[in-house]
Each structure stands twice: as structure tokens, then as C-alpha cells.
Length: 433
Image (cartoon, rainbow, N blue to C red; front, side):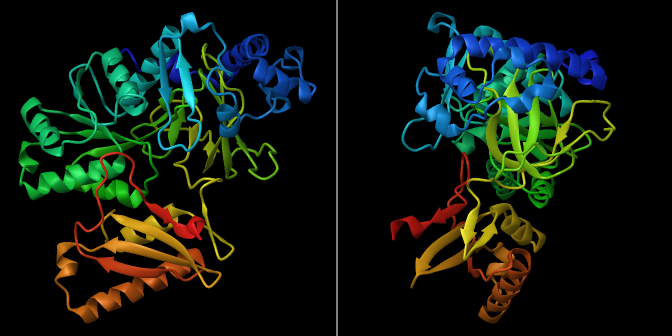
């Protein structure tokens, strides 16, 4: 049995998991209260002291943290250890204004590496594998996270980072990469590029670990077919540690959360009320083992469901569904909530590739929603009348899914720029008016 499949932890009883969480939560709350004035002030405003937190049952008494708090406390306001104990920072990408910076002690990095090693093992990885890491490195957590997990497992690690697709494919062929780690949109692009070059027989991949952006089950099937692999989801946030907070197992039916390090809750995003298991709501995390940057009740804004149904893999840690959207970046078009994942589901179910963009604008005080979709080469060769028919079919399917009209424009293959990082799916021009 692989070293980083840890049955005594990952297959522990519910009673044992709660015992770990209770003990670590009590200790963590006191650590944060004593060393983070910003959060201590939030607790005092709510009339809560560390003595009020005796177990996970008391978690609801603590105040929430949001990304706004992290920006307000930037850079060191949420640091819980002396700077001399910090060995690394990571930062989120694409934020405006103040960036979100997370801090790590060496102990924090060791635990993060362990969580990512568990994810690789759950995807079938061993020390004999060649792990091809095409997530970005630097401040982005994707590359460092899977790189550290691969090292922890003892696998040969290719720190490719993103971009330079020709080199990616060359190393994949020459060095016999067996596990690919990158965003799902880049995996799809790599699959297309490999097929175009006729190199499918040179590729030895068996699995892929894909995260950092939303992707649907239809996209999973497309990637698995393109690369002849099994595709696994992985979840994480820079604020909590990075990838490896949760990961899929062989069942591919939800991601196991590393409950010995994180406590997960689902809340009503409007009221903050904690919801029972099985209900859809906003995911909230509490870090119970991090030293430098331990966030309590951090609102992720991701919408999902938690379940403790028995898993065929034997792991007993709670599973989270693939995020179904976000409570803060969903589109509101003509008063209707629109999640990009809904649009992707329609497009991929109709046989279109996973290259599309959603454009929102405002004309004459009315919102306009347009979806631009790439055609396959076969579709592009159709007569104009056939393309018009396809557009109408998509309009009808999107209206059935969304409840509102969305214009559809089918564009030529390769028209929409490919992404070597997170795909740019939404262009909302309403803010320009």
C-alpha cells in the first residue's frame, strides 16, 4: 500500500475524525485569538471568546471571514506567527486592488505536500509514475502544490509549468509522462494538439488531475477520450492552502475533503445559516492545522453539496460535489441567475468543443447575453443553412436550461483564443456603460 494512502487517517471512523477536529479546532481558535488582532476584534464584536468553543458543535458561534477581510488585512493583518517563521508566500491571480497573500511555515508546506500526495495516490499514482505538472508555478498555488505532492510520494516530477505546448508534448513523449496535472481547459488543448500531430500512440498518460477552474462532466468525458486517460478533479484555494484541500478518488463521484486538516460547512449564502448535509449552499472552510495563515470559517463563495454516503474506495472523509457555480460571480441577466457551468453543460451535451465565451452587454437599458461557440471542422464545412439551424437549436436548448434568451454565434475552429492557464469564459461589458 502506498505510503500516502493513509488508511488510519483517510478511512478513520466518524468518531475518530470528530475527535481530531474537536481537539484541533479548540487549539486553533485560541491560537488565532491570541496572535491575530484582526480576527480577535471580529470575535469580540460577536461576543465570542476561545472558552466558548469546545467542539465542532460550537463552530457556528465564530464570525465568518471573506476575501474582503483578507484584502483589508493585507499584507500581514492575518498572519498568526512571527515573520521569521514564514518560509513562503503564495498569492491569488487575477484580483483587482489588493491581492490576497497567504503565508506558510515549513510545517504548513509539509502538510500541504501530504494532502497533494494523497490526491495523486487517489488518482492511481505511485513512486514509479512520471508526474507532468503543467499548472503555473510562482505565486500561483497549482504548480508548487502538485510538485510538492509528487515529491512527497517519490514520483519523478516534471515541473513544466504552463505554456510552450510544443515542449510539453515533446517531454510527454520522450520522458513517458503518466499523470498530467493542469487546468481542464489546458488539458483539452493539449489533447487537441496531440491529436493534430498524430502523436496519440506516443503518449503514455493514464490519469490527469485537473482543477483551478470549473468544468463539467461532459468536459471530463471529452478530455478522457482525447487523452485516453481517467480524469480526476482536485479542489483548493490559495487562502486555505492550495490544491489538495479535496480530491477525487476512483469513484469519480465527489471529492474527499481532508477532514483531519479542514472542517467544511455548507451555509445559506444569503443568511449565513448552516445547512444540513445534502443541501446545496455555499462552502465554508476552517483550517485546523495551519500555523501561519489559519482561516476560521472562510466563505469560499463556491456552491456545492456535502455528503457522507459510503464510498467504494473505502475513504470515510466527507465528500464535496463539483462546485455548481459561485455565489459571488454568477451572472444576473435580466433578473435571472445564470451560471457558466449551465451553459457549458448544454454546449458539450450537443457535441460542441469546450471552447466558448459568454458575452454580456447592455443595450437600451436591457441586458444582452451572447454565447460564442467554436465549431468542429466538420461543422464548419456545413452549408450556411445548416449552421443557422445549429444556432437555433442551441438557442432553444439554452433557453430551456436558463429560462431566458441567449443569442448564439457559431464561429470557426481556433477562433477563440486557447488558454494555458485559467480559461477566460466570461466577458461582461455592462460595467463599461
